[in-house]
Length: 193
Image 1: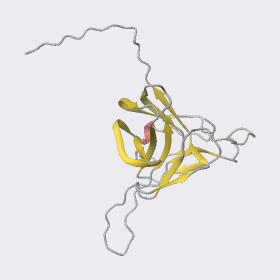
Image 2: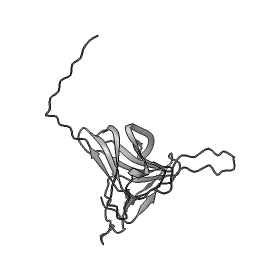
Image 3: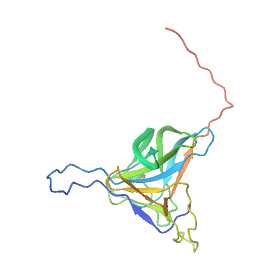
Image 4: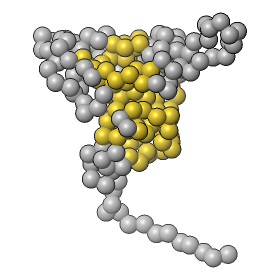
């Protein structure tokens, strides 16, 4: 994945500043990157690598895989597809070379030909992730990002409900799928009691 010099800040929870006197917290402002599974029969994803330029000293960040509906992120998080990381587990770099791995508690099944999105959320303005933006220079080289590195779109939201696509930008991330050994036999004993 190519990385331009762009980084996007993941916006945090904000208190309601309206005149209604309601100080209930508003939802965080997450980022979402859409993607489509092109592996026959789908796949099981075990983890995702994201690339941060800055992080909080105290507030965690979380990654989720969600379903998409009509080309937009939903709030429907897939089973086992949510992972929180404390700041001590988040790696940063100045050149987008160091990954932060979010390992899910169990492999997450993704269907072939189905659109999903990777969502990053936090309650801190200190987190920023690397993106690739068409027309900008790749970090550490003189090459220009001339095509989108991913088959999806990055979305930004102010309320985790209404999403705005950014057609010229993609999140830098890597997804890791499980590889199962199907040549090994096993024995299962079932008993009626």
